[in-house]
Image: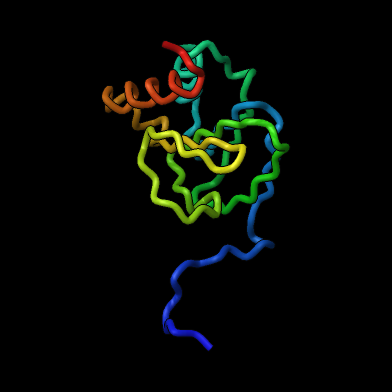
Length: 138
């Protein structure tokens, strides 16, 4: 018996979800159709600004509308999502862009897509501040 006559939250079918393993301390999720040479260069600069490199991160290029199931070990892990909502990660949370969201051993950071960041310097700065906080850079 249900009190609701409508769907409160769509639970993705497990057979439709993409299983993603987190192997490096930082995982980055980008829309594959928006990840070009310009976006890769910008990502390299963003990571470099906090002493990281693209080689230090797993970059996952996903189609728009993907549903993910994340498999990770129990180590601390940063997940940066460029242009994907928490729903993509099967999270039922409200997200604020550029705020670190701790969930168990993972830390989520949601951002506008990489392709939009050059147009909004205040967003690039907010992303940089959040990354500095995560990596404990004064």
